[in-house]
Image (cartoon, rainbow, N blue to C red; front, side, top):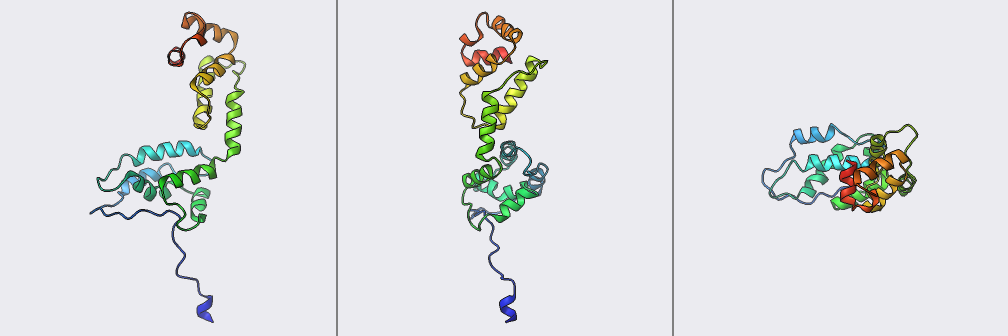
Length: 195
């Protein structure tokens, strides 16, 4: 009876399945783990920014016999803390087989469709605030785009939205810098004028 009530010794597998590594002398360096842990993700941060940072850090370590995606699968748990770590621990054992699986589950958990809808509406309905300078408006607009990289708006649509929500003085300044109607330029030229 006592044996039946004891905690099981199996069932503690991780959600992430790391492919077998056949390389000699492969190990994750402690400095790399420390670097990943220096910017751990909590559920309150932008998951896209976290992935961008994580990809930069993980790309600094290469082993000729180990794919970078395997390194990422090994390292990613070290990049989480708090509720984000609890989320990963609650995922079913052996349910994440690839880096793409992990990114998809991570983004779906911490960037739900409702957030995409909210940010797409913020981009679509962007307005320059009263007393906001041109540069402040441009930085705020770019921040919205960066927060939702899958917004689906073409570069032309983005520039059209931004231009048409500026105050008349800033529109005139862009037209003047363009030597005519700003929106008659191709997107690359528009961006160089803005920047």
